[in-house]
Amino acid sequence: DTGVSQDPRHKITKRGQNVTFRCDPISEHNRLYWYRQTLGQGPEFLTYFQNEAQLEKSRLLSDRFSAERPKGSFSTLEIQRTEQGDSAMYLCASSLAAGQGYPYGYTFGSGTRLTVV
Amino acid sequence: AQKITQTQPGMFVQEKEAVTLDCTYDTSDPSYGLFWYKQPSSGEMIFLIYQGSYDQQNATEGRYSLNFQKARKSANLVISASQLGDSAMYFCAMREGPPSGGYQKVTFGTGTKLQVIP
Image (cartoon, rainbow over all chains, first blue to last red):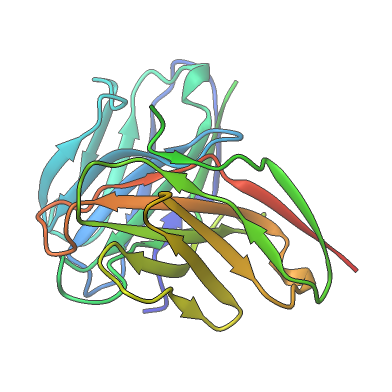
């Protein structure tokens, strides 16, 4: 297990279509996070899971967005009825639960770049 | 108010020289952690260095060191002996609350683009 994997790397979709992204975290990591990064900005938190439970959702996560982590392993992020403002890099990260290891930071994937046309 | 402020949108440094990337933060929580990440053009965020608010010494990791000035709420990254491969975006980030806390949300700054000149 070499890191966090995200698929696809790039996605171009027409406005109004639904898209789904997948994230495979590091196998021993029980926490999984989704972030969104727009051009010229740092990543912004969307949501996080501990095992299969979704414990926090940002206000950025409108009702068109849904995330799942059904078996506490991989996660999916779905965007329904995409809008041009959804164009961004979607980053997934994973970590151990707090207190279980240094450096209490995340391991990020390479991201999925979404372009809505 | 911004929790993490990076005032340098872009920086240039000559190869083999040292460079300092600025970061200031804002929190009222006595326990917090500060991170620096590197993001090359490939998009992946690469962890570089971590400093806890109660750590007595400045963190160092190879060519990276963190100049932590708690009273000034600054956490500048120093890269020594710059290499061409250091050209990337650099993000400062903060976790508020203790590392053993239940939630580990990390807030990022807007980043600094570093370009190393041969």
